[in-house]
Length: 277
Image (cartoon, rainbow, N blue to C red):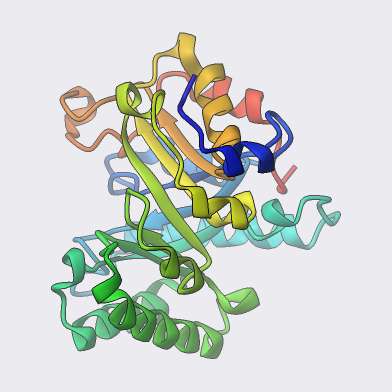
């Protein structure tokens, strides 16, 4: 069993929260057509997926990415205009997020905003994933300035319903103040060998599961149930689990999250249908 703090343990009920997928970023649609098709399949419990062309929006609109973005946006529209889902976490799902690389706080503010405007203008994204987001207290003011500006840009966009969604890709537990800077934090990103014995930060118990996401690679099929149990106990509402790892050469990808896990259909069925069913 994973190590848990007492306060977090008291707030979690195993199996009591619906999980959904956050996709950190599949390969280009030409290289991963099946992956992008799955995102728009009715019933996929998708909260959000990241579009990353060239560590950002690229220098010009990519026709293949435009097509993939359009399919996902249309799937979300069909889902949201159907029967209203009971679960408000799922109701906010199915967004396409633009990838902004903060380089642990080293990227210039103006560069990030220029990338954000390109994502909005070209791909009509519904939010942003802030990759390599710093986690220390000293850089929190700069991140808050950035997220405040991004929220304003999304609010002006006709494609970001509900004001858009911002996800901070820390990959670890940041200084608690970051929880007020965005809609969701990625508080774990790494291998199953670390995740199964990981410890949740005590302060996360003050927030609902939809505020946290976990990305875990190298999860064996036989440990899927255990991995989902860890996510629920630690209070994560959004997950991406894969049996691929960072040394896996399959599909020519070194990023374990760039392709579907071999047990995709099984994990979809374990979580249950999403809002588009």
